[in-house]
Image 1 (tube, rainbow, N blue to C red):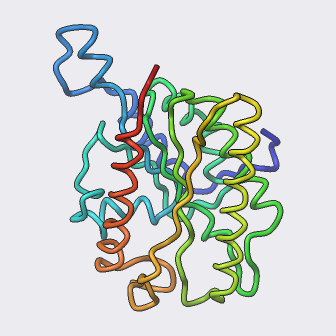
Image 2 (cartoon, rainbow, N blue to C red):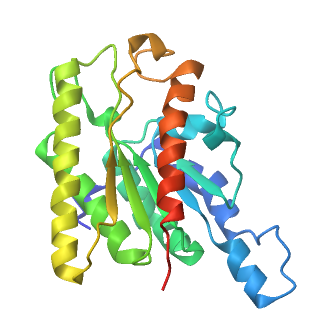
Amino acid sequence: MASTSFQYHELSNTQFNLHRPQLESPPLANTSTTASSEVSSQIDTVLLGDSMMERFKTTGKHTQVGQLRYPQVFNAGVGGDRIENVLYRIDLGLLRLLKHKNPKLVVLQVGTNNLRPGKALQFQHLNGYCLLLHALLRTLSTETQILVTGLFRRTDIDEQCITHSNMALKELVTKINEEEMRREAQPSSRVHWMDPPGDIGLEHLDDHVHLNINGYQIWNAVLQQKIQELLSAYNPK
């Protein structure tokens, strides 16, 4: 990755203080046999991104997704993360640790912190997102699925900017899949897109950007269904 595409910020230390020790700790399940150890160490779902993911441990903790525990889910959300910050974290070692855990699914929610009033995601942001997807696709198992989730409405950003950003991300997913299917000659896509629920409005925000409890309940209803759909289709060779 180009060095200008990823960037440290103060909360990046969360990876070392919380994420890395959890990934490096031995599984809690029975490890009496090699087979059981291998199965128990595999992560079902990784939640990767910003505070929208991280808050499944706080505001959204009573949802189905929030109630899942490691190794069913590994929450790698960090508050304040922009696209370049996630790139920094995976380059620093997070992706290497995740590869060892062979996740079945990675769910992405990142990009809202790159938005500015009157400005949708710019070329450099989309290029960074492209780098992120390529890194996941190239490093993780060819059976690992990736779910890109759309950005939510905000009180401080024009809705048109949110719409344009989501359209650009959706187009990026289509482009990546076309490239990968040509490159790997795969009959199906590994990267999936999910729009933000249309019934989540500004009344479902705690502040200018973060979902409140009701917002997380609505998001959970569609996100959990999509996660289960993709996990059910997981079929390692």
